Image (cartoon, rainbow over all chains, first blue to last red; front, side, top):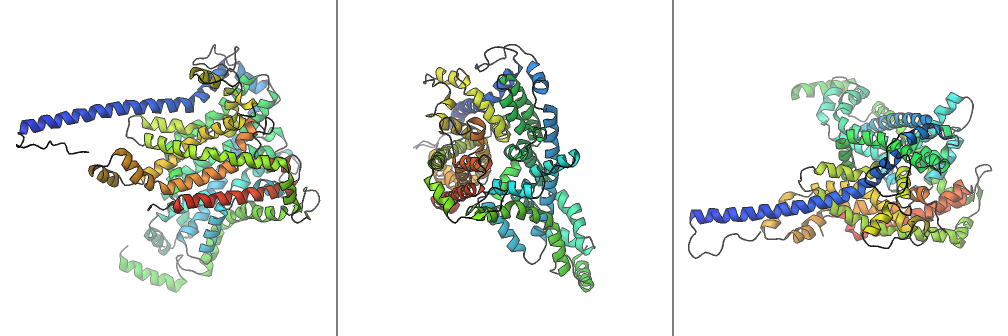
Length: 311
Length: 310
């Protein structure tokens, strides 16, 4: 800002001074207001670009008839027919897909968070030989690109017998595990949690150790509660990841009844080629849980991401 | 507990065989027990693919019979394969997304970093595409791009040529898919840049303003250098994911029309899971990996290792 005071030859009176200040202030307020209006205009345009495709899919999914791909602001007629179609109109077992997705998410989030919260503890708070070696090896693994991962993991899954067929219940569990296990050792999760644990005061842990607490107790009673915000953030990230995974599941699971929702949606779109509106209804159903989880945990979620960069 | 007490009981513990803080065989065992399940899965699903994948690249393998060592034959086959080259070319073209997405994400981050009322809503809105699966996003944009659909309508409104369906035209399909990558990714990088912006001390910007720096000067001399570490991380991530572009292509075009969106990883995928030539696919994977590393190094150089000081 340039100096507001004119190069006055005579000193200004208090009144003049106040008037000048008020003038400058109102000019600044006016300029601020124009800038804010501009900022909101840009923000709204971007929001429209980001949200309209979802909104358009939503309203089209409710329309019973009409020109399907037309750009519109309001639906031309509302009916639930397309939603009924998703559940009954094809060979794709939609209820089963929803169940599969839920099971995969619960299993995946539980296993992944448990493993990362356990493994990060010694790396953050214990001294033992090989600690740095393990830490840096994991770091290198994160940097090393893993293109062959898909292929070798596919081979591994088959060799582990996870796709063998014996009896329906065991097969189902094995196939869910086949989807979950490759992502269950999350390196990002390990880093996030190690970072959170490092923030726990060492004195607290020493005191507990002196009182004779076992490491598992310290982990459960001190580390977990104090790292809870990070754990929640990580769990949400993992929920989103497992809910959205489709490629690996499509490669792994020959049985269409075992597919999660995202993968099943593509199945739906190929069998429903004549009724895109029903596929849109399926897409809406697929998005809703993720939006609910995301909106509920939004604060943690953003923090978790920020931690991932700074970590 | 007072410090004297603590010192005393620590000495007592020492006599009993040491506290958890010490390196003892027992504590080492406990530490490894904590990490064991994680490490097993890490080795099986992260380390082993790197080792076995590299080995497979030098073999012929179809899962049924054991891998057969063939030396560099897979690589020779790849280099002679036009399809591989066209996939690689498209993947390299895809890097065009990187500068665009980074510039837009930085601008959007600056915009949502202002203390405006309701700014939380906008941040959330921009993040919605990020949390949505490519399976859903790809389908939605397939519909949006249909002839006579919303995209055509917007182009018509802006007075731009309406080129039929972009995904069916070999000249435009790749760019249409790139736009979706851009649209889906902006929110992600925006959040990272927002975190970066919040790490820059406001005092520094204020001081510069008081010293008479204009807003543009503050941006170029303080904000942007302060963002350099974030820019490194973000451009690194987006370059590597551009070279590995796959999911959006898988959902939207399956490599078509006329191979115009066929990417390097799509090539790898079809060699492995359509043709069952795992050795050839692994070799292609190695080439993609090497290229990713090269671009990572270039990125590192360009951003001067992400150091804040110029």
